[in-house]
Picture 1 (cartoon, one colour):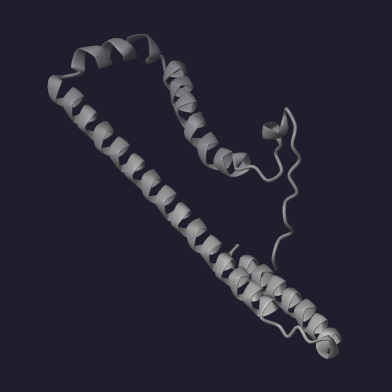
Picture 2 (cartoon, helix red, strand yellow):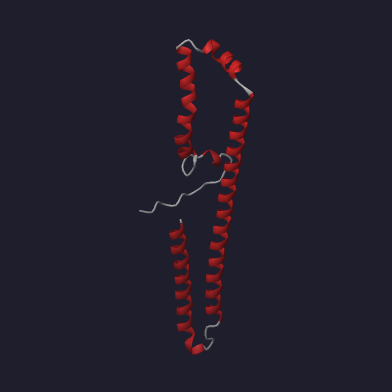
Length: 149
């Protein structure tokens, strides 16, 4: 069942709206990831390991561990940027193709209306055809946009 279209209101605080936002989806994924380190910290503190924990980490850190961590974060950053760039490119390619399709349909409808008969005895029939054509083209664009979304 298709969902209803979201009606957006404009204003100074329109970016704080919860309805239609990506915040609920993002919080479902980010909140467990944020709470997990906090839970570990409390668990280590409750076990009495928090006082010497930071010192033990500082003493055991070697150059190889630091280099591997740097390498890992560099590769991860590159992959995230690459994926975001690819998604951005696909988005704009899709928008361009949708606009081209709407432009071609509008051009076809305009040509059909422009080349209709101008004789006065067919005036009523021509007006009916033009109105039917414009309604059908509007319906075509509406159905195609709802199929895409």
